[in-house]
Amino acid sequence: MDELIKQVTSRFGVSESDAQQAVSMVMSLLKKQGNDDLFGKIATAIPGVAQAAENAPAPEENAGLLGKVAGMFGGNAGQGAALVSALSKTGLKTDQLSSFGELVINFIKQKAGPQVVDQLVGQVPMLKALLK
Image (cartoon, rainbow, N blue to C red; front, side):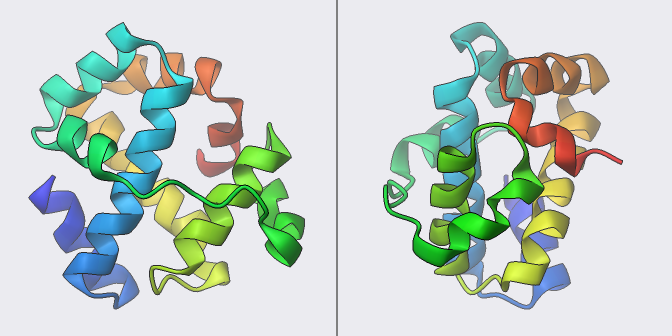
């Protein structure tokens, strides 16, 4: 998890605390939307992920105008809008969110394997937009 946090801070110029918060929010979403077995594989491959998901602040239900950019996450626009709204409060700029998501998914792929990411995308369709 520390390695991912360092990558986020380096690439996006946010503080370590903001990077931790942003990654935690994504991991929380993955835990809620994926099944326990699948999230368990991610947590085993990336130490600290389970705790990060548990400690993540809950995204706001009303994402306001940022809901319009939720389409970049595909799938459920409400969840995407809430995540976009929450991530924008961590210091990430709206135009960085897609790259941030791609970084997180590629990190999971590197650590847990492409099969895990394929299963994850099947369970959390909004992630499809982040895979290139």
